[in-house]
Image 1 (cartoon, rainbow, N blue to C red):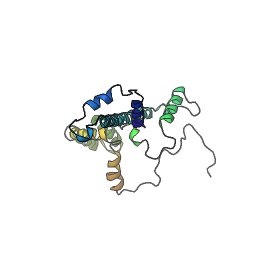
Image 2: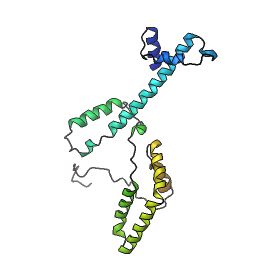
Image 3: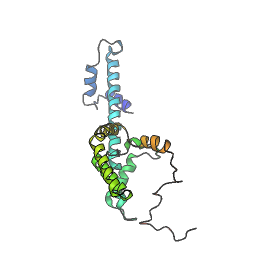
Image 4: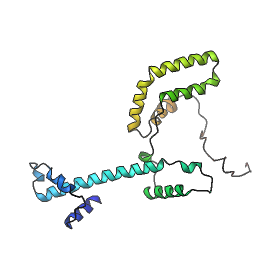
Length: 208
């Protein structure tokens, strides 16, 4: 569609590229045989320009959708009391999303999972094991955590940050490979803790 619009505007003597097609045409290699005729050079230049516009458009589309999907205000609103900002957000998401999205249609547009700092991770770990250990074992665990934070953790943190730059979710594949598939501990059947909202909505009093 972009190529057809560019070629059509060229035949109508309208430069929608603002001079970029002429700039690309001027820098094409002249000695290459297919680029020797002016018409061929113009068509190749318009194809390159249209491809670039398409790539940039897809990039901005995904970034805009990723920015919209970062909005979390709708989760904290009461049932039946939707704010105006949430309505505008829902309309924008509906406008940018396709009519029938498939399972992984928005996978590349999801916000990236932030990488927590090493200090915050170790602090949360110590808080989680404190009720399980006595004072002597907890002090030893603090020493081991401090040693890990100073020696091993900085190198691993660099690898994790690098992976978060190109991966949509830096933890999902490791979780599936090393914990879900290689782990031999039993899992609860249908272990989905967020099935219904029992805080704001009371569905029924009948158990059966």
